[in-house]
Length: 446
Ligand code: GUN
Ligand code: ZN
Image (cartoon, rainbow, N blue to C red; front, top):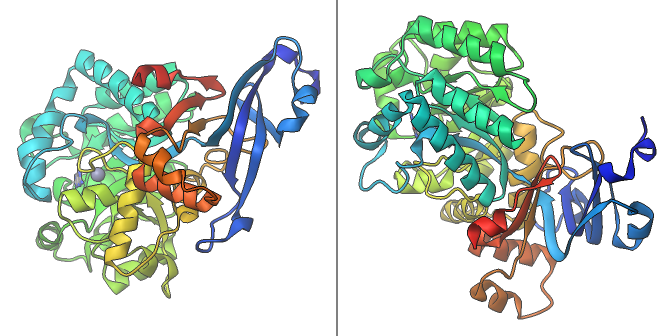
């Protein structure tokens, strides 16, 4: 059936200033990297974008029974994508005074132990999806707790809401309290059962998730590596070279491996589907191997600053002799904000400290199409025919300080985007559409 054969009432129109990326921008001013309609209309049917047209064509596009959401003057972007966030850390965020290993022991493992209770996990899943949507994030790649039920709770809630979530049961079988430990066999079997039940069910996907080398035995890494080989369409997520004490500990636990990345590589966990959280303190060999394998370095700036882990070398990795793919993420609850806008602001500051620049169009590309490409989902992160109709509507003047800043006049789109990422938060999110359906997030904020 072509779009013109559909009943008119299947159609939803969203009008506003529509911005979507065509490719990765090469620095500020690369206007060819995106399409922008000052007055545009996103035409949606059956959860997908059919076309993006000029606002002046609204009469051709509309008709009886067709719903129009008029956000004229507001920015309409693809819903943000968060490529690394911990579902069971919503009550860990903002925990005082520790660096990674102590932070895990003191705050994180105790908090995650509660997710064995399915009623608690289900309630937390509702909060989690509410919160990411309030921030304009429509897809996230999530760590659950060790408990399979935590991943099930989040996948079920996401299915109910229509969002596309990528979720892993976190595998960990040593160096943590007994109530958050599994074993090599159960981690394999639970993850495999999740894949059978949930991977590709509607919009949900399952991620193979060894927490990090310190909390997985060689037997567990081997079991998950064989699972990754058996399911090459599943993402793999883990943590890599975040903190110097962590790296030294991995060296002691795996003395036969060349370096930290080589631990994962040895067990078949490194490839183009691998999301390596943090990747801060990489050696030249690790960078070369990341590049050759197509693995993604996931930049988590608010977390790296908050836990005091270090400064990610964005331009060194992106533009070096051996270029590495990069994604951007919040890493809540090591990270301190659910907002990808706030995350981009901290990315900019980390890069300033490294003598590097992150233009607004590079940052907005990362939050949308860049992150979609990093997770291998070409129908996410863009507003164009065929893409999922996951949208965020942003008001750049939502706060007095932002309205005042932009009242200087004659701001270019790039300048407006830079103000939005530097000062922005969930307060700038007017509405979010998931599969073409408005979520009413602005009412939740009021
Ligand atoms: N390394 C292993 N687990 C974690 C975690 O939960 N958060 C962060 N930031 N790093 C980790
Ligand atoms: Zn993390």
